[in-house]
Image (cartoon, rainbow, N blue to C red):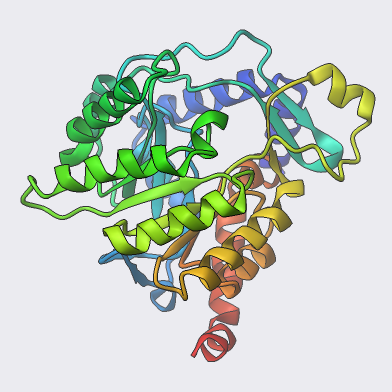
Length: 349
């Protein structure tokens, strides 16, 4: 009941104000005695049967938080209270990014979706590292890294990824190269391969092996995607995050007038599920299950999380589903997956 009231109030605010207020609340309660235990008691859920090993790492369960909610890695401890086994922080760029002018996030309530053109708003890699140093949470941390938008040439873009990757390496468990936000990059598999070549070579210099993933967009042309997947299988890339938001506006219930008024931006939420499900299936089939896939985008229910796992995904990430359905969605999903796990194991065997 309390959550429903809070959610109703937040839906009346602008999404960005609601997001900021949520982070402020979490920051405010972090110092309260037993706050973490209380949140875990309400929202957490432990299950030995849901433990899974992917990329050589042991995950408590297959559900994680997608990038975007915590761009500066400020709340890794607090967000882990809600039952996520891993957190994708960022996107993190070398230098701070202010993002685009406001308003830049638009809810489509009828569609359970969001349109955002927030950009890559974050405080830069140095700020993220200072926050990660303070983190004591048990969740696995993936750093979602991107280039500064002012970097346009191949040399500048590669330098951005090199700097962010090398600075973050010792402070996270996974590094995810995000090319899905940039319409110029996502259609150029050669550019992605050039970036990954550099980072794979750089990883050799470290004593500890950490997985390198590539995040792809559902809008990426299939020819480019297949070329990139072939490269990943041959080069040593550890997995794929599939996918992200889309620039498509197909099959929306929201009026065309409102969509046109909102203008450009990336669409996330319920309308994206089938598109990203097809993307996951294609990647699993094309790679013959040789590249672990993290399914991301449009997962709004426990049943949809199960569909992604049934399609071959090793893990799933949620974000817009949490905004619309509340943090209790994680617990509901874990309970559902635990209940259906024997049939899923038989299906996958």
